[in-house]
Amino acid sequence: MAKGERIIAASSAPHIVVLGGGAGGLELACALAGDGRRVTLVDRVGSHLWKPRLHEFAAGTVDSTLSEMSFYTLASLRGFRFEQGEVEAVDRASKTVRLSPVRSPDDRIVGPGRSIPYDRLVVALGGVTPDFGTTGVAENAIRLDERSDADRFRELFVAAVLRARANGKPAKIAIIGSGATGTELAAHLRQAERAFLDQSEKERQTKLLTITLLEAAPEIMPGADGELRRSVSDRLDRLDITKHVDAKIAAVEIDGVRSADGESWPADITVWAAGLVGNPCLAQLADFEMDKKGRIVVDDRLRTSVDPAILAIGDAASFTPPGANAPLPPTAQCASQQAVYLANALPAMMTGKEPEPFVFQDRGRLLSLAQGGSVGSIGLFRSRDDILVEGQFALAAYHGLQRRHQWSVLGPLRGSVAILADMISPAKGPALKLHGG
Ligand SMILES: Cc1cc2nc3c(=O)[nH]c(=O)nc-3n(C[C@H](O)[C@H](O)[C@H](O)COP(=O)(O)OP(=O)(O)OC[C@H]3O[C@@H](n4cnc5c(N)ncnc54)[C@H](O)[C@@H]3O)c2cc1C
Image (cartoon, rainbow, N blue to C red):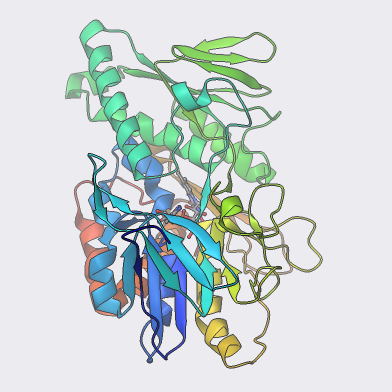
């Protein structure tokens, strides 16, 4: 232990420590707290932000303060302990987690490093966008992984649009990756542009942005159902968003991107939104078994394969359902269902019982394309193929997951007030982005 480090003393009640207060971890900490349980939530930042709306905060079509909640306030409200700090290591032998010191924005240490003992540990540290070793991504592109990325994009975006207004030439935005993040960001930028136009410019359909979506696969939204792909593609056309498929980007430069076969696209801002892997810190924490996307392998009770006292959920976990040939994809829908499962299963496991296995209920895939409308594919009946949903029904389905999240984190009364504030805010945009159901 380093000099000045604190040890958080153990007491007799079993201690559950949840690492990461995102979509899964925060819901789990709130659900477990109370009933005489000792629960500690750890996060490197002091407030929770609902990540599925990160691209809307980046575009500015939704005010992030509506989706931000202080962990300190939630801890006293819901009865868990909050420890702020970067998770550095897990010592399985002594059952402790080590946190680094907390630093101020000017890099001074404002809180010491700590060691936290646990009886059960749940790793919910999320994932990041990989660069696949592509030249220049780290230096010249923005990846939307956390709040600071959305803030940085927003600053660059506003500056680029103001420059475009001043010199009469549209700003060029390139988005690499046409999954949900890329397509939704493109649509929300088209909407954000309108705030910079006066009425006559809107009527003349003045454009301050050219938006280009680049996809390495032969079709946009690889992996999505064909009907959904076609619907999204038509909607992007209507929003005047240019799409290029088979564009395997080899380098991101300061003023554009270049493909492996020599084609190039100029860009004032490049967003890299290609794929998701486990948080790189996961591989350093302990000797976990990892999958090829850097996620911790868990069994059907979400226990790590190396240690049943350590579990993992959400984007940090790699769970392959029985009979499936790939792990579940990283979504808030899955993280949330795993949190609900562990809220019951973990206390049972701690009394020596073997709970029923975790079963994922796929509630579909939904997208909010701002003025392009809402669309998704939902499996209404287990035995039937997914059906395409649009308009108000799709919008209501968006609302479902974040509404549920707000309720489970804030409780029914405060949750309802938060939802109402969200609904009446002038900064909410036309289509709240709330995947799943
Ligand atoms: C732009 C965008 C749009 C998305 N849209 C959707 C959608 O529509 N529907 C959907 O279902 N999913 C969507 N997702 C995916 C969804 O956000 C994630 O799957 C979900 O947030 C995963 O939840 P999680 O709890 O595993 O991790 P996260 O929500 O990522 O939370 C991880 C937490 O760990 C903390 N943390 C990380 N490293 C450390 C460390 N070393 N020490 C301490 N704390 C740490 C972080 O601060 C964070 O609070 C979207 C993602 C993005 C980026």
